[in-house]
Image (cartoon, rainbow, N blue to C red; front, side):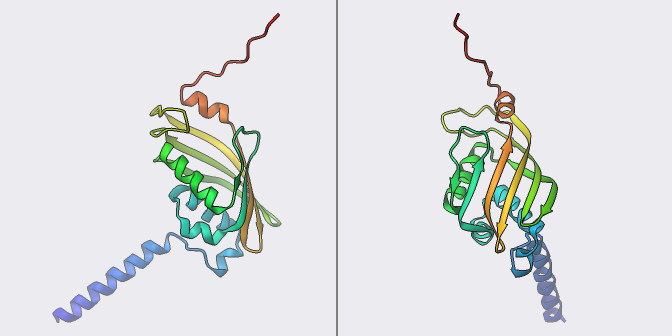
Length: 174
Protein backbone atom coordinates (compact mmCIF):
# COMPACT_ATOMS: atom_id res chain seq x y z
CA UNK A 1 0.00 0.00 0.00
CA UNK A 2 2.84 2.40 0.86
CA UNK A 3 4.52 1.76 -2.49
CA UNK A 4 1.25 2.46 -4.34
CA UNK A 5 0.76 5.71 -2.37
CA UNK A 6 4.34 6.80 -3.05
CA UNK A 7 3.94 6.11 -6.78
CA UNK A 8 0.66 8.02 -6.85
CA UNK A 9 2.29 10.91 -4.95
CA UNK A 10 5.25 11.01 -7.37
CA UNK A 11 2.91 10.90 -10.37
CA UNK A 12 0.93 13.79 -8.90
CA UNK A 13 4.15 15.81 -8.36
CA UNK A 14 5.25 15.17 -11.96
CA UNK A 15 1.82 16.10 -13.29
CA UNK A 16 1.77 19.34 -11.27
CA UNK A 17 5.30 20.20 -12.36
CA UNK A 18 4.25 19.62 -15.96
CA UNK A 19 1.34 22.02 -15.56
CA UNK A 20 3.57 24.70 -14.06
CA UNK A 21 6.19 24.32 -16.79
CA UNK A 22 3.52 24.21 -19.49
CA UNK A 23 2.55 27.74 -18.45
CA UNK A 24 5.92 28.90 -19.81
CA UNK A 25 4.59 28.10 -23.31
CA UNK A 26 7.74 26.75 -24.94
CA UNK A 27 7.99 27.48 -28.63
CA UNK A 28 7.17 24.55 -30.87
CA UNK A 29 6.25 24.04 -34.52
CA UNK A 30 2.59 24.83 -33.84
CA UNK A 31 3.18 28.09 -31.96
CA UNK A 32 5.75 29.32 -34.50
CA UNK A 33 2.92 29.74 -36.99
CA UNK A 34 0.86 31.68 -34.49
CA UNK A 35 1.91 35.32 -34.73
CA UNK A 36 0.39 36.40 -31.41
CA UNK A 37 2.03 33.49 -29.64
CA UNK A 38 5.40 34.49 -31.08
CA UNK A 39 4.91 38.08 -29.88
CA UNK A 40 3.97 36.79 -26.41
CA UNK A 41 7.10 34.61 -26.40
CA UNK A 42 9.11 37.75 -27.17
CA UNK A 43 7.64 39.45 -24.10
CA UNK A 44 8.60 36.39 -22.02
CA UNK A 45 12.18 36.79 -23.26
CA UNK A 46 12.18 40.45 -22.18
CA UNK A 47 10.63 39.64 -18.79
CA UNK A 48 12.93 36.70 -18.02
CA UNK A 49 16.06 37.06 -20.17
CA UNK A 50 15.55 33.43 -21.23
CA UNK A 51 18.22 32.79 -23.86
CA UNK A 52 16.82 29.39 -24.86
CA UNK A 53 13.52 30.93 -25.92
CA UNK A 54 15.32 33.84 -27.64
CA UNK A 55 17.37 31.45 -29.76
CA UNK A 56 14.13 29.80 -30.92
CA UNK A 57 12.02 32.84 -31.75
CA UNK A 58 14.48 35.43 -33.09
CA UNK A 59 16.30 35.14 -36.42
CA UNK A 60 20.10 35.07 -36.02
CA UNK A 61 20.28 38.42 -37.87
CA UNK A 62 17.43 39.95 -35.84
CA UNK A 63 17.41 43.76 -35.72
CA UNK A 64 15.88 45.97 -33.03
CA UNK A 65 15.23 49.54 -34.16
CA UNK A 66 14.86 52.23 -31.50
CA UNK A 67 12.70 54.77 -33.28
CA UNK A 68 13.62 58.41 -32.52
CA UNK A 69 16.09 57.36 -29.82
CA UNK A 70 19.71 58.35 -29.41
CA UNK A 71 20.81 54.77 -28.77
CA UNK A 72 22.29 52.35 -31.31
CA UNK A 73 20.08 49.69 -32.83
CA UNK A 74 20.53 46.07 -31.76
CA UNK A 75 21.89 43.65 -34.35
CA UNK A 76 21.55 39.94 -33.62
CA UNK A 77 20.30 37.78 -30.77
CA UNK A 78 23.58 38.06 -28.82
CA UNK A 79 23.34 41.88 -28.77
CA UNK A 80 19.68 41.62 -27.74
CA UNK A 81 20.58 39.37 -24.82
CA UNK A 82 23.40 41.75 -23.81
CA UNK A 83 20.93 44.64 -23.87
CA UNK A 84 18.38 42.66 -21.84
CA UNK A 85 21.06 41.88 -19.25
CA UNK A 86 21.89 45.60 -19.08
CA UNK A 87 18.26 46.77 -18.77
CA UNK A 88 17.33 44.01 -16.31
CA UNK A 89 20.21 45.17 -14.05
CA UNK A 90 18.88 48.73 -14.23
CA UNK A 91 15.30 47.55 -13.57
CA UNK A 92 15.52 44.14 -11.84
CA UNK A 93 11.76 44.08 -11.22
CA UNK A 94 10.91 45.10 -14.80
CA UNK A 95 7.72 43.78 -16.28
CA UNK A 96 6.33 44.13 -19.77
CA UNK A 97 2.64 43.44 -20.33
CA UNK A 98 0.94 43.25 -23.71
CA UNK A 99 -2.09 45.52 -23.53
CA UNK A 100 -3.10 44.77 -27.11
CA UNK A 101 -1.79 42.63 -29.98
CA UNK A 102 -2.91 43.09 -33.57
CA UNK A 103 -1.82 40.84 -36.43
CA UNK A 104 -1.65 42.14 -39.99
CA UNK A 105 -0.04 39.75 -42.46
CA UNK A 106 3.42 38.95 -41.18
CA UNK A 107 3.48 41.90 -38.76
CA UNK A 108 2.32 42.10 -35.15
CA UNK A 109 1.66 45.48 -33.59
CA UNK A 110 1.87 45.33 -29.82
CA UNK A 111 0.84 48.06 -27.41
CA UNK A 112 2.77 47.31 -24.24
CA UNK A 113 3.24 48.72 -20.76
CA UNK A 114 6.70 48.67 -19.18
CA UNK A 115 7.04 49.01 -15.41
CA UNK A 116 10.12 48.79 -13.24
CA UNK A 117 12.11 50.35 -10.44
CA UNK A 118 15.48 51.84 -11.37
CA UNK A 119 17.69 50.01 -8.86
CA UNK A 120 20.81 49.69 -11.02
CA UNK A 121 22.86 52.00 -13.25
CA UNK A 122 21.79 52.88 -16.78
CA UNK A 123 25.14 53.42 -18.38
CA UNK A 124 26.59 56.52 -16.72
CA UNK A 125 23.27 57.34 -15.00
CA UNK A 126 23.20 56.35 -11.31
CA UNK A 127 20.21 54.38 -9.95
CA UNK A 128 17.39 56.57 -8.70
CA UNK A 129 15.26 53.90 -6.96
CA UNK A 130 12.25 55.49 -8.67
CA UNK A 131 9.47 53.60 -10.39
CA UNK A 132 8.87 54.00 -14.10
CA UNK A 133 5.72 53.20 -16.05
CA UNK A 134 5.49 53.85 -19.76
CA UNK A 135 3.44 52.74 -22.70
CA UNK A 136 5.21 51.77 -25.89
CA UNK A 137 4.43 50.33 -29.28
CA UNK A 138 6.34 47.45 -30.81
CA UNK A 139 6.04 46.61 -34.48
CA UNK A 140 7.28 43.06 -34.88
CA UNK A 141 8.17 41.66 -38.32
CA UNK A 142 7.96 37.88 -38.65
CA UNK A 143 9.35 35.80 -41.50
CA UNK A 144 9.39 32.02 -41.76
CA UNK A 145 8.22 31.57 -38.17
CA UNK A 146 10.82 33.79 -36.47
CA UNK A 147 11.05 37.45 -35.50
CA UNK A 148 13.38 39.21 -37.93
CA UNK A 149 12.94 42.85 -36.99
CA UNK A 150 11.31 44.94 -34.30
CA UNK A 151 10.63 48.65 -34.02
CA UNK A 152 10.25 50.19 -30.55
CA UNK A 153 8.36 53.46 -30.16
CA UNK A 154 8.51 54.88 -26.62
CA UNK A 155 8.73 58.26 -24.92
CA UNK A 156 12.24 58.45 -23.49
CA UNK A 157 11.58 61.93 -22.10
CA UNK A 158 8.81 60.44 -19.96
CA UNK A 159 11.21 57.80 -18.63
CA UNK A 160 13.81 60.42 -17.72
CA UNK A 161 11.32 62.74 -15.98
CA UNK A 162 9.90 59.82 -13.99
CA UNK A 163 13.47 59.05 -12.89
CA UNK A 164 13.77 62.65 -11.62
CA UNK A 165 15.82 64.20 -14.42
CA UNK A 166 14.96 67.66 -15.64
CA UNK A 167 14.80 68.22 -19.35
CA UNK A 168 15.81 71.74 -20.22
CA UNK A 169 15.90 73.20 -23.70
CA UNK A 170 19.16 74.64 -24.96
CA UNK A 171 19.66 78.29 -24.13
CA UNK A 172 18.99 80.77 -26.87
CA UNK A 173 21.65 83.33 -27.53
CA UNK A 174 20.65 86.77 -28.85
